Length: 142
Ligand SMILES: [Zn+2]
Image 1 (tube, rainbow, N blue to C red):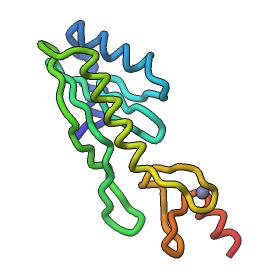
Image 2 (cartoon, helix red, strand yellow; image 1 turned 60 degrees about the vertical axis):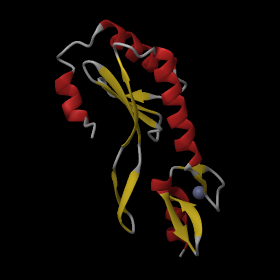
Image 3 (cartoon, rainbow, N blue to C red; image 1 turned 135 degrees about the vertical axis):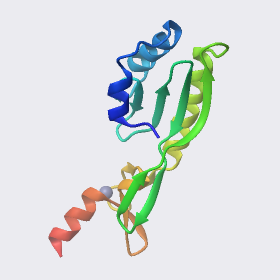
């Protein structure tokens, strides 16, 4: 699983030139905020995770595993690997876009305010999906 601490340590080692070019492309060309260095966390909330290793790039779907009613842990699921030897930036971008589309599909509309939210920030009230902000508002009212 990608970790931001490991990420910081790995950054000390430079990536092969083509992977560095792909990394810069993802950081600057996508219409989403990007965090991280060697592992990129794209979108807020995270829509896709792209982990640069020394001879390949692995793309992860930021899946969430529920452990309790409102406790969850990140369990990224691999969507595929692009090799630095025979892979292309186009292949990487296609995989990234596919994963973003899949992630956006997993979002649900809050039944109170109508905003589309990641499943991990949605709770439920009388069987209807409700976002965290609306939950807070309701608690104050009661
Ligand atoms: Zn809401």
